[in-house]
Image (cartoon, rainbow, N blue to C red; front, side, top):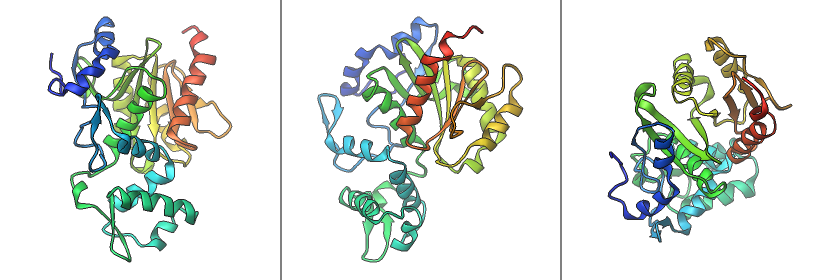
Length: 281
């Protein structure tokens, strides 16, 4: 077995969720998955400790904050600009109390440094060059904590396209769920990115394959690209009045984070259990 987590005793304790065994029982060979709580690509609050195999309250607080769309937008903006003034950040969050709340959190927990005029990324996080891995971790942690089901991020499987590297894999009541996370600007999502998602969804063939685009904006352009790339099955169509949730081709779902990531993932599961699972394909 090639586990990236075999040298982490506290993570071994979590293997009782049988994630690897559930994959194996469905015929899949697990090559590796990323560490649940020590992946170096994931943002960790400084001073985070581990108690009985679980991260301390500091990281739990970060998990709660990261789930808010505004928090992620502020963090992304400051992390990837040299410096940000209050005027810059007010363009992202017009609510001054909310902006103050998150800036206070980020400075208190040393995500950001404040020099009296501008906020800067703490050099401690210099190695974090995008929020993608943290988004993947957050989604897997949502499955583990909110649904209390087995889930991992950065899952590599044999016989899946592009080395079998799936962003998130979870088992909900034994149903395989795959989530591909896009954390950057939706306009930068290419046809090649979407084609790879479709290839992975075809190879792994989960009951639910989700393309999660972390934006509050409409994703109609990306849906149109997906539909042009589809070679079989029905086109993806909007399943809600906000045009935030799309489904088609039996098991393909696409969502944005209009309200929150948690709300969007819940809407996918609600649609599947209330309507899709009963259909004949």
